[in-house]
Amino acid sequence: MTAPRVRFAPSPTGYLHVGGARTALFNWLYARKTGGTFVLRIEDTDRERSTEAHTRVILEGLAWLGVAWDEGPFFQGAFGDRHRADAERLLTAGAAYRCFCTREELDAQRAAAERTGGGFRYDGRCRRLPAGDITARLAAGVPFTIRLVVPDTELAWDDAVHGRISFQGRDLDDFVILRSDGTAIYNLAVVSDDIAMRITHVIRGDDHVSNTPKQIALYRALGAAEPVFAHVPMILGTDGKKLSKRHGATAVGDYQDLGIVPAAMRNFLALLGWSPGGDREIMPEAELVDAFSLDGIQSKPAVFDTVKLEWMNGQYLSAAPADTLLPAVERQLASLGVASAGRDLRPLIDAVKVRSRTILQLAGQVAVRLEGPRGEPDERATALRRKMGPAFAHNLSVVAEALSAVPAAEWTADVLLERVKAAADAAGLKLGDAMQPVRIALTGSTVSEPVNELLATVGPEASLRRIHAAAAA
Ligand code: GLU
Image 1 (cartoon, rainbow, N blue to C red):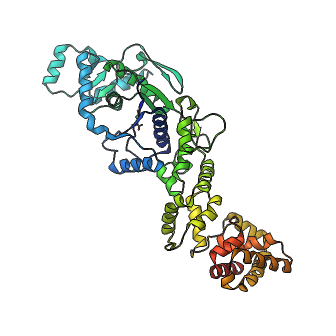
Image 2 (image 1 turned 30 degrees about the vertical axis):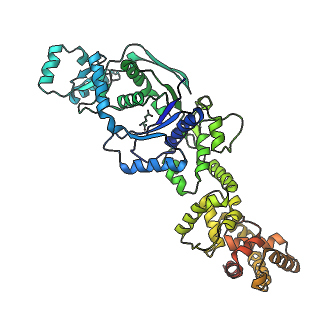
Image 3 (image 1 turned 90 degrees about the vertical axis):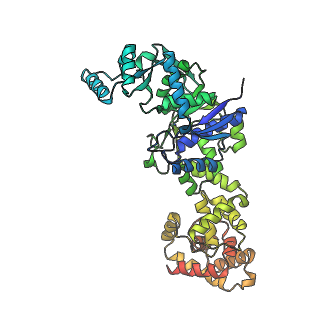
């Protein structure tokens, strides 16, 4: 068997949707797993809606995700001559015909069909035009489209995901493959390109299932072998409705901006509609590639659960060496306006990464440990403060008094722990009731590394300033 050739064929008419990214990822995983080739083809034939900006966003999104193509990007718009040649070849072979029906005539036929309650199917009248009639219309320069003769046979395939799917040719009409301006309709362009690029497996969203019988008819008419089709399930929000902007971010770039790291996004997307079997969840790239197969793609829709994505991202952040997180954290600090030049951020990243779910949270907590402003108290911190009542400020002043007595040269985690313990004992406070308000005062959060380490990182001046400010608030 020759090595598989797969492709991702986005239309650059919008941003890179997570569904598209998942399709790209499945193709890429399949190519990596089988030693095949992953082709990227930009389907830019919708000239009005395709833009270079969208193309750029798609390419950047794939690069960010680590989904690298082996061939391309090819631009479908460059293949117009081949699309036309394929249509003409079908015309010559009698597998297609010219249709001179005008838009008005087709509208009238559609209206008539609707009046009698039937759905509109083109009745093939131009197929029966006498040769002389055709020659005369061509000589007069009457515009025409080209339609495929759809045979009255079964058009079926063994879908790698859904099993056997069957349509009847008689239920389809002779669809247009070439417009009167000589440009190809989607189904012809895709099949012509997939044949020319020797694509063996078409892995795409199952919104394309209804196109597949038409494409099979084209493969047969063009005398080309049909590829394996694998239609991957659609993606739903947690409410069971098709994933859309109502559910929040749907663009890959949005997740980058929200502080998701590529490895986590890739792992999460891979498990949307594909399962390695068992209950494995955290699977780095090599494990995904190793376990991937089309058999593992499920036919039922997948649910996009952002809580799970953030959890998974947290797992990747915890495990990542600080060095690899550094560039993203520095970028985020810069956008927060927090100066970090000259500081080694790595120990700070290590201190907070296990408690962060996104780069934004992580950088926010690093900022807190730099000269940056204290984070606003989050929901839990506010609730705890309310629950403690006056004890919150009281306990802070107990700790502040003890800390003020520590000389700057002795401001180390060990000394600080000892002093705060002694002060809490003397005041009859549990250590946690003394420490937790300090944690909130310094970070705005109820979770962090041990408070004495936090105090050591933030330093005497900023620590005391924040404790006094929180006690007075
Ligand atoms: N360009 C089509 C789309 O973006 C994909 C075509 C295909 O995968 O066959 O929906």
